[in-house]
Length: 429
Image: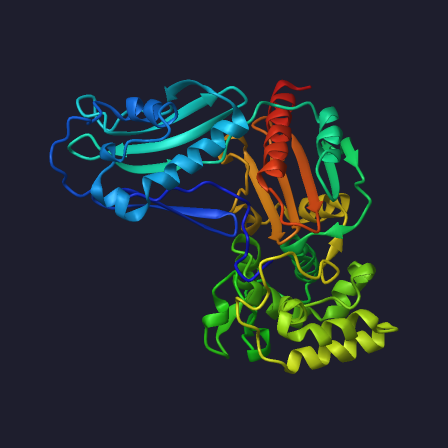
């Protein structure tokens, strides 16, 4: 959770044909018509050759990009993005098609897998009618499968504090400080879903019960409900879906009001008082530093609740009120990776947990349920998967540090673990 909701880092290149946008670990790919361009001698005969050129020709010749692409993104930015991938994953090896071209006689668009020395990058590329690059979409890298026993060393090499828990078919495959509670940002929303689902199971409420949005529920993004009118009617299922799939903070606070903070404190006593996202934003805002210091100095739970009551009366801070550095890591929701896997395993049967696959490749699995959390200095990735053979596993990784994180380092580890689990579970190992 952060004012700009730092999502798990994914490389998105926007051109005139392919437009990528990420919202709380989900994306939409929008198609528009490429602008007509005059004939160029540097035109590509196929999209595959263009993909090869992009990864072998930095700095790139801007004459080989369409005018509309260059208006959307400078080619110097593409240079930087490609150079970062080459530095992280090694030199170019080859490029292979992942799908058939748009037509046998006009191979102007397609999906390709670019293999580097230490990873593979799925790429969608499109050419305009003149053979110039009109669209480029780079997806998260696929790294070589990593034996889970090697994860401990990789986690220990990260600065700050880390935790990992990997379980398959009820058996612990890896535990690295899995019982140490760390800040998990928006991954705490799994607890709210777990508590709500328990109420439904017990017959106290129904998923189609309606809750009206209160002014005090309105938080900051991520999400969209903060812009909806006060009094808007939403079902509990809709609120839960927005909370998990889009990490909507206002939906989260509405459900927390409905359940009552004491419900969550009973579920996780170490997080007493259980903060709303709005309260966390108010405490972290640089303009409210005196309030934060009083909160930190409070002698007991009663005093902290009183300070939060004051926070509720303050206006929502502006989205730029938090500075650019990591701020107030003690204002968080602290959970263990073991507990997060347990919570997601309890709720993974709900379809709403399977809308966003996070960093997992959906087609690799029969089912993928996911919830993560990210803000300055905090990252969690929690994924529950069901293999093609029907076997279940869960992976939860958390990283905390007093400086901004290079989030892709944890994403790479998560990807490698999932690759290893895919092979293990599908082979019967």
